Length: 105
Image (tube, rainbow, N blue to C red; front, side):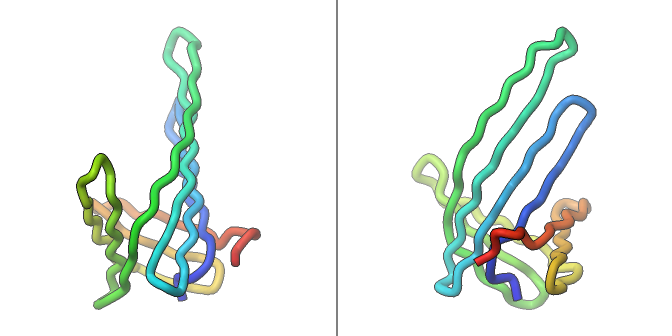
């Protein structure tokens, strides 16, 4: 079951993005995202933001709807596997491996 809090970390050579998302029983979710990056000249920057919306699971897909700048955005992710502590999603031919957070509800 996807309910609870999940964490996903994506890293590049000079950047890192961490997403912590909580999926609630009522079909809503919220995510806290932290981004860190550095330029070749050594200048580094970090920012964080929140997103929220609704979610639905059907036909091995997780569909999320978020509102950004007064516009609803829909993202459909394929559920590759869902285990107690591990959720593997696929979007744009790339897999995302989410781990259940120790702060899960």
